[in-house]
Length: 170
Image (cartoon, rainbow, N blue to C red; front, top):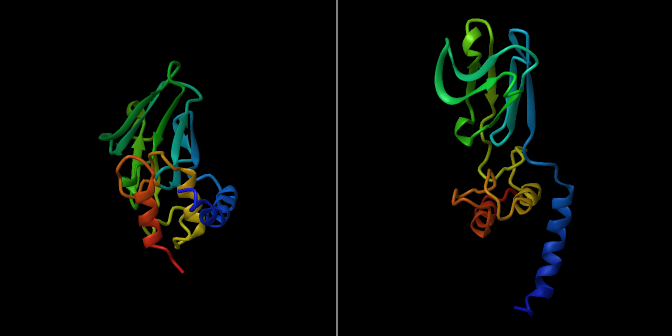
């Protein structure tokens, strides 16, 4: 194994440098409850992003669905006890529009979350290519669950690296 170290070092150094230059993968989008509305009322997100609703006054809910009917995707209170509600956007919602409402005020207090479609499998930064930037993201999430777990076995590991490399875009 020690004989491989001199061979691996030149290969790994550029990858580690690339990782250092990569931005964070997931974003947090904040939506405020303002009087009887959500602001902004429509947001665009990616799978893996976090949406955080923040209460400013009153007693409200954040409930997925439309026409005052929950679809069961998420639901949580916004009140004195629970001043924020968080939802991590699942990959299963990619390419869809998720509607939500406040249960007590459902006829007027509504919003939408547009979830961008997944681009190319392995294109972790959404630039339309599988390349070094995606490799940096994958290596940065090593041994972690999440969107970099390309084979869905619960952790980002060598199997995911193999999948990403097999989809490499020249």
